[in-house]
Length: 174
Image 1 (cartoon, rainbow, N blue to C red):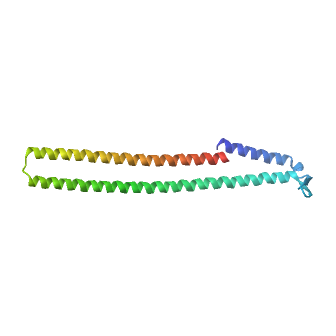
Image 2 (cartoon, helix red, strand yellow):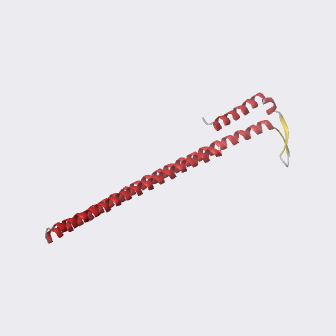
Image 3 (cartoon, rainbow, N blue to C red):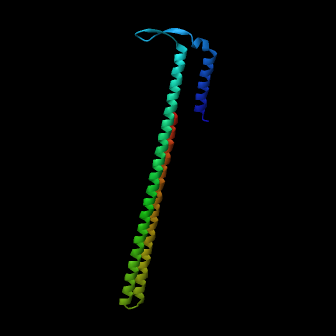
């Protein structure tokens, strides 16, 4: 258990023990002023009832705050999963577009090769062009992967900071 919880239990136990030891004084009726009238009632029992009511109220409040934090965490996790799926689909479509682009370029190169004479210079030009395209494709794939990883890392970091912040805020209210 945390120190705050132990301290709270110690205070409640001390209050219960003090009440039990001084029960005769707690139930002794005294004159209480309500502003418009005077009433004979045991002030100790009234104060004990107030403490019990406040304890129950704060317990319900803590349960509410923890439940709200849990629901928010679940909603954020679902949003994160949806964003991951969307990013995966976008990445897959990029690869499909890349494949179709490379196929088109290779078909054009094949047609150019058939239309022109086979010479060493045209081969070297095509190889240089293929090398350039390959480098551009690899750079685009790497940049896309880095961008996706950075975005997902940022989202996860925000979720972790949000959960820790909510936990700290809810504990500090107790």
